[in-house]
Length: 312
Picture 1 (cartoon, rainbow, N blue to C red):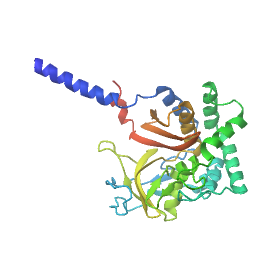
Picture 2: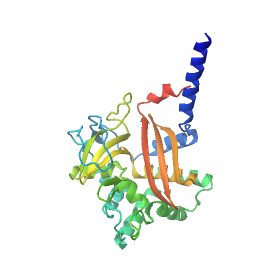
Picture 3: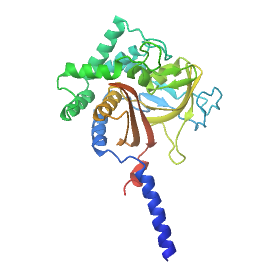
Picture 4: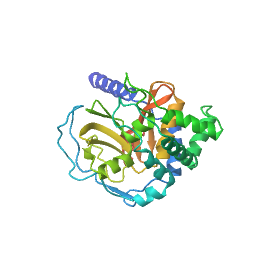
């Protein structure tokens, strides 16, 4: 009996150690982000506004590899309601920004007056949404943002659009928006960033991107209704062994989440564990000084499978 008890205690200690290695659920941010989720009226609905086909599980690929077994013979997106994208102000202005950047790091970015106007119009549209208004209200309540909307717009501009050096010995060659929403390549052998579903769809539609399959644990298979996916793909012939993105969400929703995490923390790298809708995910934010270096979701569980597991 003593041996069994000892074994039970040993297993309990091991399980406790595993749980302790994971960040605890951030309930405050989970509540806030679910509120933003409900406010995201511009979000596209699966099966109505778009259809995806997750297909097969992608295999292991080394960074820099150009040879990979394709587990998805079809595109990820079989259709997207482009009329809705074009007729939704934040989406339409967002898409105008996607061709403003050099794909490769190490090439100095040149921002034209027209591009500055596009950035301003996009931020104006984002600030008009209920999602970003609620995010602003929360940040003001925490003393992280000014209540003045113009100052908040300048804060968003600094975080997301201020250019900085990602590669040494060059001029400013990157910004948070480009890295997260557009994607970049490094030394022609590595995709960095690229965490946005609209950019994924447009690049796939234009045959610049090839979806290779999903990445997930054995017991947690994704489906066509999931709003977060971990995936593998190639872009202009360069492989991304594991990427991740929200699916269907509006640009203001994604910007709001990552801006809140960025401003509520001061560490260079921050990971928060949250439950949003039926998904449990880690949201990762890495700083580049006063600007955003990268930000992305990492799906842990979908279809509320985590509810029973974490109920203790």
